[in-house]
Image (cartoon, rainbow, N blue to C red; front, top):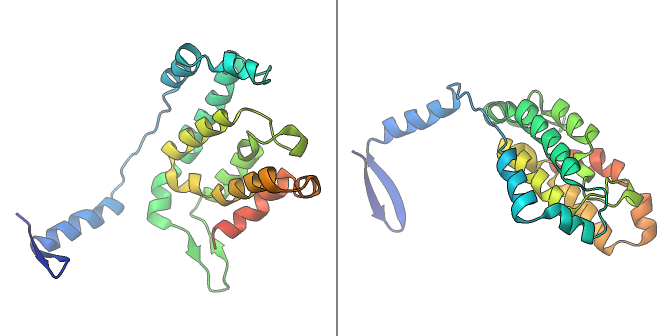
Length: 197
C-alpha cells in the first residue's frame, strides 16, 4: 500500500514509489493494441432523428446537405480516423515530435503522411466557405469531424488547430483582400509547420 504525506503543500510518496514508477513507465513500453471504432450509427441517429440536422441545414441554405451527404462525409472521416489516425496514437506517445540539431522539428513516423491525407481529403477546410477555397459545409459538420479525429488521436487533432484558428480569424475579421490572398491552401501546409514550433 502506498502512503502519501503532505508536507508544506507538497505530496510525497512514502512507500511503493518504485513499483508505481516502474508500472507507469511500462505503459509506454508495452504494446497497447488500441482499437478505435467511430460510433457513426449513434451519431447519425442523433443528427437525423433527434436533431433533424438535414432539415435545419436546409433552412440555413445548405441545400446539398442531405442525410446521404451527411452520412457519406461522416463515413469518410471515420475511415481516416479509424484506419490512419488511431494506429498512430501509440507511435505518437512512444516517439513524439523531435527537435533536430539543425533546428527542424520532425513528427513521429507516419504522421507527415497522415497529415497529407488529412489535407488531401479537404478536412482542414470542411466548413470554410467555397469562395475562399473551402467545402462550404455547415460548421456543425466541422465539429463532428473534430470529434471523430480527436477521439481517434487527440494529439494529431491538435496539429491543425492553429491553422484552423488563423482561418477563422481571417474569415471573421479579415478584409476581402486578405481572405482572397490567404486562401485555404496555404493554411493547410504553411501554418502546420509553425504549429510544431
